[in-house]
Length: 154
Length: 154
DNA sequence: GGCATATAGTTAGTTATGCAACTAATTCAA
DNA sequence: TTGAATTAGTTGCATAACTAACTATATGCC
Image (cartoon, rainbow over all chains, first blue to last red; front, side, top):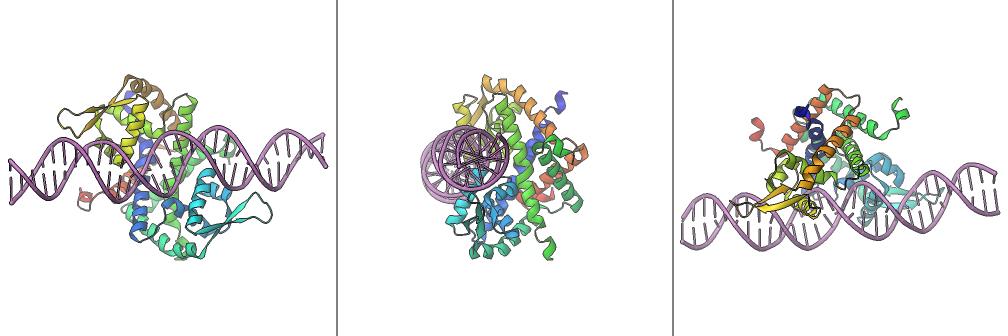
């Protein structure tokens, strides 16, 4: 089957490069145009903290799909910009709880509006059912590659 | 509408983080397990050269959705590993044609097999029609964000 | 109690990305 | 035909990614 030899690699290119890169770049550009100095990676961390403040770094790893060194440095940079602060957990001294500052809270509304607007631009002509399929395929892909065989049965 | 306030941002997280990261990590791991020293980014450049050898750096930018500095440095690293060489275009001295070495040609079959196998693992339980929808949505998203309004009419 | 193991987080080193500013070669138009 | 604008590629700087190796704290078992 030499003819569909490249097809899955092709799909890999599509999933990994094109669209996600384009969306990320646009959102970053929209932040910059609005005079906001944060990166999309920093925003993605803040996003989870807006939903639930005071998460541990480990929990942020899980929710943002990043490894620990990545979160360490993102938090370093967010701390430099005074958007979060590390607070030692009172019950377990290994754990840092990451807490939003007022400056970060002030960013929530405007940046989420920009993200929503960016996704609206991105999704022109794409209907809801298709979006649901994309999400379910991605969840499935993620589960296929990260869950143990036993977990996949649930 | 406070309740679906996060939905598009949520989708952004999904598109940009989860699945593509998981696939990339798994493919990189499979390369490493097979004793192959190349990164997936380098592989994605080789992939386009296997389809058509001797592309210019600009053409590689277009096909891999990367900017020029990224390609410059990927080619630098591929050259260090003696997988490609830059050859000046005979007709336009600004242009570098990027040509595969024999070592790179030898990587084609094994790495494409690994990529196909990785995508097969990733896509367990996902049917062809869903894959087509993901691809078409991503093409649409890419076009929405990169084409001029006039081009979008075509 | 004390040692092995596990967990939370950091650091070092390499690769990659994006932007801005740059050089060199080419094209086009006055 | 020469000088402005365009195109191809490179370099510098900042941020971010992954791996491996590390420290510190907590847990669990004897």
